[in-house]
Length: 69
Image 1 (cartoon, rainbow, N blue to C red):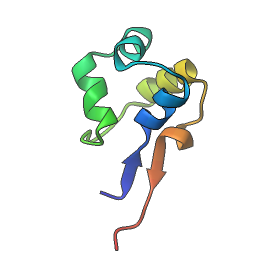
Image 2: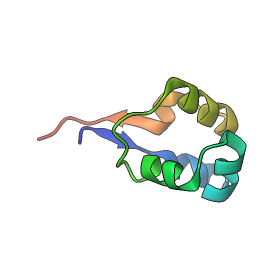
Image 3: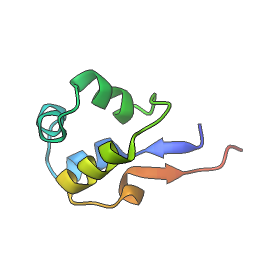
């Protein structure tokens, strides 16, 4: 898939666990895990906004586009 999710990188930079992020953005651990592993088919802007606010980052810090070769 050409969209790469770098949520784990941002979480590591902010020293935040999946459990802590889950509580702060009010998203279930399973849904957050699906997003983190790049298996999500979609993400709501409200969810992305909440994650960015919590991790103090931009959407481009979390989502990256890479062409298939």
